[in-house]
Amino acid sequence: MLYQFHELNRSLLTPLMHWAEASSKLFSNPASPLAHTPFSQRIAAGYELMYRLGKDYEKPEFGITSVPVNGKEVAVTEHVAASKPFCKLIHFKKETRVKQPVVLLVAPLSGHHSTLLRDTVRSLLSHHDVYITDWVDARMVPLSEGPFHLHDYIHYVQEFIRMLGASINVISVCQPTVPTLAAISLMASAKEKLPKTMIMMGGPIDPRSSPTAVNNLATEKPHSWFESKVIYSVPANYPGFGRKVYPGFLQHAGFIAMNPGRHAQSHWDFYEHLLIGDDESAEDHRKFYDEYNAVLDMPAEYYLETIKTVFQDFALPKGEWEVGGKLVRPQDIKTVALFTIEGELDDISGPGQTQAAHGLCSAIPKNKKQHFTAPKCGHYGIFSGHRWRDIISPKITEFIQANA
Image (tube, rainbow, N blue to C red):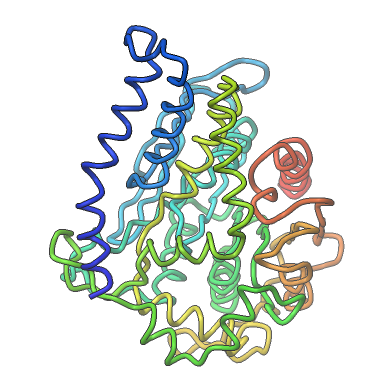
């Protein structure tokens, strides 16, 4: 009943949030007579803070309409290159004849929408032809489409690789580093054509290295706890009615609980920025939380299998993971160049967890392997922000060019 209670609470709060939004504008719009009273700015700030704390956050847009290519701004449009029940493959098509390396960017299916990688996409687009996996909110997928397992994720990645061709470069960020490595390993074992490079960023290849709070939760709780405590049925007001999911609102509560003080301070800073008229800082806050607070439901079977396979059994680094009766053997990968990237201050996937891929992919020559630990960089800084744009993205471009 928790999901149903959440929906009831959301429906009750919606009118209040609309009122708070309207009241904020009433006390801040220069055309309103209430905007020129002694306490109007303070009242408007309070109402906007209330609105943003209680509003429902929908999936944001990528909003990338142009990027610089060779010093010239070119238009960008989104196209659905492939559509599956639980994922759309989005192509960011540029109006240019410049031939660039093709990149398959495998986005996480771990709570947030793929738009969380907007900054990643924007930086890559200047030098690459980019496709991204845009995972569908499970509450929007009818039961008639069947379940979605961890092995389905792997098969989706394999299908997209085959579709885009052997000359592509595969970049996986966080959670998908594990199924992406499995997908390419199984293709290598089957003697299929493989990508040129695989670039893995901040992912739990071996969570036993530098365990974080996320890892500890998975190991401290039995599998039955996750089944009974975080899995709920989608209510009747969504297309996925009856589907078992790990609800987005529970995931969001977990995200906030990891750093409650930081988020509380951020909201207070937002309020003070509104008071002093610091519009730039206030807008930065809005943009961040518009993305951070927008979450999706994950299919229950996929989530539970990921917990068990990746974080409890450590099946990949132990060499015990079987998919469709076939053992996942990273040691069968010989021709794909490997680049692993970690953040020094990553509190989601600790340092060493992603680098572990080098030991597993033992047949890849040393001259086709590279690792980089970004100094003073947390988890999100690996793929978003100035460290990503100024340091990490150029290194990825160099690596792809060197292994073309």
